[in-house]
Structures are given as structure tokens and as C-alpha cells.
Length: 147
Image (tube, rainbow, N blue to C red; front, top):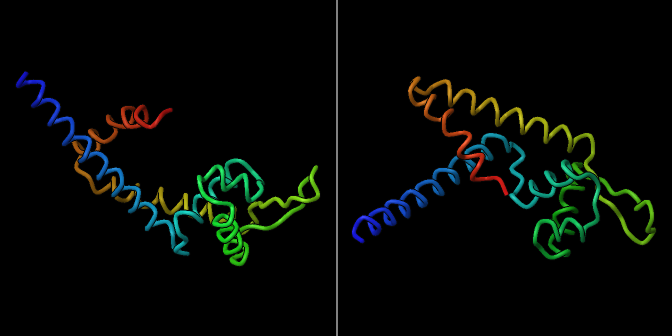
């Protein structure tokens, strides 16, 4: 019984530490790759349009778990920045699709490059044993993230 409590406490501490570490890494990657200083909702909408193609405001709002009015404001700001454009819906003339512009695609590409370059530089500063530990952990981290 004592061992179970100790193991449980150690697991809780590990979960807290891992959550904090992953969050810190993600925030650092975002800050290194976000010179335009777009917010998380804007970045999420751009990423979804990049992955899935053109979509309506309602579809994006549902996918990002937000209200259509909020997504509309996000899309309006991205449109003003020249990162997305409106296009007619192919089957429903009442709806409008939003798609990435060439500038939006390029911004996403540049963000990916900036993230990789920063991470490469950070990993290059590690001691060989630290780097190997990180590399060995990659399959476990991937498995945790899989659905």
C-alpha cells in the first residue's frame, strides 16, 4: 500500500513536470516562429486551412471549438493581413469559403523553417548524452500524442 501511494505520487509529479515541460517547449517554438505575433486562435485557423483546405466560417469554428462570431473576427483580421481570402462556395451560393493566400502559405512555410532552425540550434548545444536521451524519448512522446 505504501509503495502504491509513493508510485502514485511520483507519477503525479511526473505528469505535472511533463505537462509543464511540453507547454514551455511549445510556447518557445511559437515565440521563435511567430514574428507577426499572431495569436493562438489565428495560428490555429491558418494551420487548419493549410491542412484541410478552404472552409466556411462555421466549419472552422466547429473544428476549433469556438463560436462562429469569434471565428468571423479571426478570419476578418487574417483577411486584413492578406493571409486568407474569400472565395465562393462551389455548391452553395449563400456560403463563402476562406482559403490561404500565397502570403498565408508562405508565412506558414517560414514559421515551420524558423521552428526547425531554432530547435536544431538548441539541440546542437546539448551534451551528447542529453541529445541521445532526447532522441530516445521521441517514440514515447509520439505515442503519448497519438489518438
